[in-house]
Image (cartoon, rainbow, N blue to C red; front, side, top):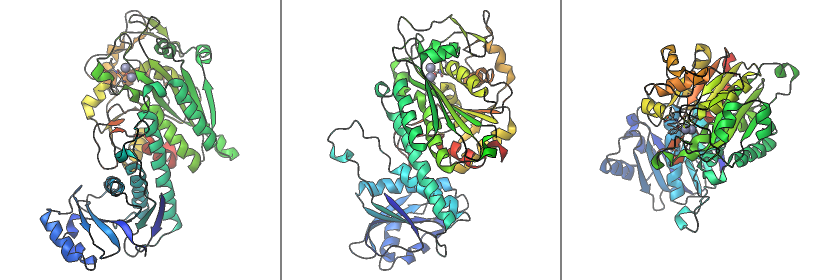
Length: 499
Ligand code: BES
Ligand code: ZN
Ligand code: ZN
């Protein structure tokens, strides 16, 4: 797919021309289409098109005008417009264009006070909307991937392409591509996305992006005394992998900065272990490595934007299985930090793996430590499928993460790390237990993680809800969303917590 940024519609005939309309522009805006404005106005009326969000209608031009089809898309109220509104609409439009098997399309961008954000969002919408996971489909015509050849993004009236706008286009495409790459990792069935394979994918990515990477096996993890991580891994015949990726800037001064450390949950399949999940709850458990996919996707872009400080990424990959070698309820684990943990539920495995990996990352004395994890069903109960929970005591870091997410168009909501629930993690036999009260489960899980990060500014994102989309919408397809990539990239782009 080639994408161009121009001030005018291209001269050649297009397969689809997409026009975005605010509700205040209906019906006046249809006057712009020579020879078609009457038809557009009539059709809009018939279809009840008022330019509302998600409303759209199609005109077949039968040779009139510059395109075979014109797609009108509502953007809702101009006052409430955000780049995310456009990202969703462009994603939806891209899906339609693909359905029409269009080769050449053009999209006219809406006027806004921030053209860079609009161009970046449109580029992301294009990439994200074009995504489909078809790897395992055989010989189905409908599923044969179709690619749009050229996309022309037409700037609002009076605007001209510039270096800044082109950079926004390149960055948006890069972020979209990296998100799709992360989606592929998550959508891959658990049998072909084992800890070993996930580590290999990370290795391949790091090589291509010129990042440093270390992949450690069971023996190394034993040497590092990660007793919690090892316990979770031991029920599976698949060996665990501990991965550390480093982006190191070139300038000597920048190298001396303390790093930003990103940690992702990488349970490639979560059966629950001996505390086995019912089948219905196990269906999506290949997505329990979505946190690591987000971190990896973000690192791909970090390498390209080359920030003036180091960024490290970590994940501990394993399966949570049940067998004769599984860890048991009642076992006491000795963590890397030395704290001991009584196992009360083997399905609360994420916090065990993350506890050890967070402690390991924290040894780098990071300026900021951020983890992403499909950690609790309780977070889905609290916030639903679209919103990730954000936890952390450092208000400055929390605000920069929330601002980055807002700007990237991802929904985060801060939840409290109330010390009141800490008592529920007390054990009779060990320092901690891995299961808190039934109520407030997302909070007690976050409080457990907090035990392993010391005083480092830290934010934990519980992405159990938004990691997978239950239905297709905007630029989302059913399945993996790649949530987190956009927020992390935006956070790093803004200079991390320093900004
Ligand atoms: N991976 C799950 C959390 C999850 C649930 C992610 C649904 C995505 C969708 C996690 O390991 C888990 O099983 N958590 C338990 C914790 C409980 C045993 C304290 C849960 O949420 O039920
Ligand atoms: Zn679990
Ligand atoms: Zn899990």
